Image (cartoon, rainbow, N blue to C red; front, top):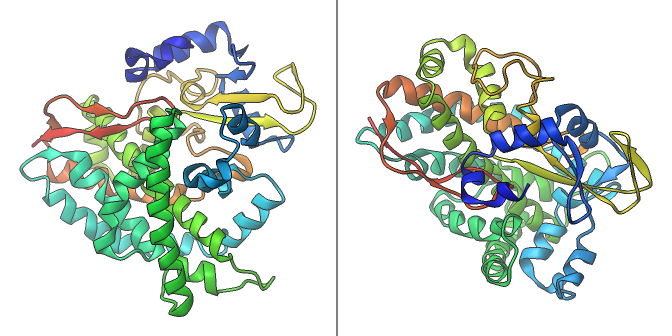
Length: 392
């Protein structure tokens, strides 16, 4: 597992995942966590109600960060729905799900398609795919959905990058940058929440803070700020990486790129296959909420479990010839969006963006190719490109 943290391991973790899955699919790591790499066990863990999100307070205290509640980066992350367990998670998920609906996502389809066409034209002379399409597209879409003014959206990229870097690199320098970023995010979003309370508009943030459901509840100000930070960050960072990873996979497999470009019937399966083949989220964690058993191994309350989603998505017991990219594949969903009560709320939105962006890009620029050396994001939890130069 140590090899996965090295540059060559981060560049292509899949051969190492395969070796681990074949020789030690369920193994105790040096830190005591139970590591799982097969699809069946990872799927079971994600759907097991006796397993939940870890309480990071003990972890932060052990690092000498007993004041973590005063650190915006840690407070925002730890108080978000992402790391909550029932009943708090149930309440937050219910309040956001009733407004973040499939109908609201589908209502964006025409505007997303028009935006894609504009961004695709912007690549007529080549350039950085991340800068010209993979970043501005999901930022514009989640910004439109939430109600963030267009002029303010580009400024979120460095803030979200600095904040989420602590998911991969946790040291004092990274934490300092993350705190600065989270402070700026919370200040901006706090002002926007206050504005939407005073003058609601037709956007998701207004709905979250002004439209009570049958229970009469809305998110309070603190919850709304944290939820907006989570939705904005998750809404573009992982989708940016998904678009970049997907494009590279297609350019490395011209026959599959041709299918995506020329056959509308494969668009839906292609998006799912690209999500499986090189997921932007590679790892997720759970903790035992009570004594239990996982994959035949006794697990005590408080023990951690680590699911390597990238390994599970290449499990030959689930997917035929899993290291082969096949955009017509229809063998069930990958675990890239998680599972159970924490299944990614924005999965339909991410799929929509991939289904619209990559076929239109390849149709407009059929001779698109990589041009130069891409720059990968550091770390293993989130996998993607910071820059991806292409030529047409």
